[in-house]
Length: 392
Ligand SMILES: Cc1cc2nc3c(=O)[nH]c(=O)nc-3n(C[C@H](O)[C@H](O)[C@H](O)COP(=O)(O)OP(=O)(O)OC[C@H]3O[C@@H](n4cnc5c(N)ncnc54)[C@H](O)[C@@H]3O)c2cc1C
Image (cartoon, rainbow, N blue to C red; front, side, top):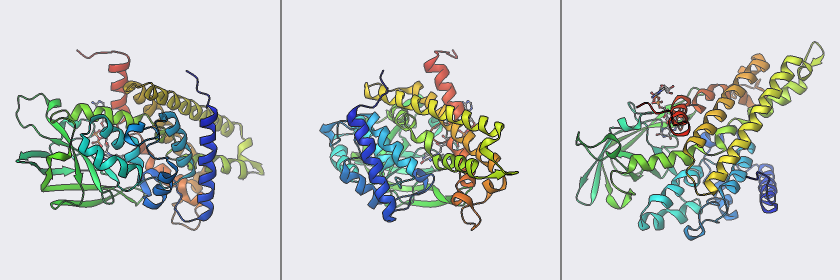
């Protein structure tokens, strides 16, 4: 395994950096902390699409560039480090597109892949429910067959971008026979979020921002052509889908701007006439933080090479997400400790340093370790599939 970038990959990195620099200068699009969760800009996503930077890793036969997940990682790393508004397209690029390529019918491929590549359609994930998060096999939202349609009833929750996405990728219970094994009882369905019978209610997070939603289904009628893959295979499909969600660098750099803020603060803030960066304890903490950042970054690059080798790196992705989201939480914690009261001032205050991103990131950080599989669930995957520590 060679993790050095090829000439073409280095060129790609330079190109995306130059592009982002010019976009930032124009000040037409909102660049911010945690842009994955918070900022939705179809126009910005369309600029990336024009460059061919959405779906770069998808095979050419499906309209992608046939490059690699390493190339995708290079692009995403630069986008997120700069705080670019990627919310509109990132789910399509990261997991909905690959999910349709793996499991979707020709109808779904024709209907959606090109639109995703052009940034003309956006998605949300309808998995979690009030009584089913880590244990998705406890989902109750039902899809009952009626002629050519499924009739959906129930509730999803924590749906990021549910209020702005065009379609939802839903995990629905399609078998109600108690003899059916739990994991064969589910199917995946693509759901137009404007279908009559869908009600979306905002859930405001601790930072005071609206990214989550509750989504209610009341006799929602969806044509069977929107079934993804095979009926009853939804649970297995979703496990592949979650590997794409976990195997990416977004899990390391969602709050990258807090890291930059912390280092700048330590260099430019004095205590008793001496910069904080000369304090041996602070130097030690910052150096340790950087070690973890670099280890996480290299590990994610390694996991993307496994995807490029055609593998579905389930426990490797679990290791990466586990390590990297704990890093993000540690970064927020250290930044608020070192910055003291400055680290607690929220973005809406005129006294906030670095636009309040450290306080915001501190409040967001518990969620980093939960979304896409909590640290405990990931450790279970590592123990079971990586270390073969069976419970039977
Ligand atoms: C920022 C953010 C965005 C999200 N976006 C979406 C979205 O778009 N769509 C969507 O469907 N969901 C979304 N979620 C929900 C997310 O997938 C769930 O929060 C996650 O799966 C955990 O489920 P839960 O919250 O119900 O917690 P629970 O499953 O109730 O877990 C609570 C605690 O118990 C622990 N635990 C549970 N089971 C075990 C076990 N077997 N062994 C050891 N410990 C265990 C967990 O680790 C956790 O600490 C999002 C969450 C966050 C934080």
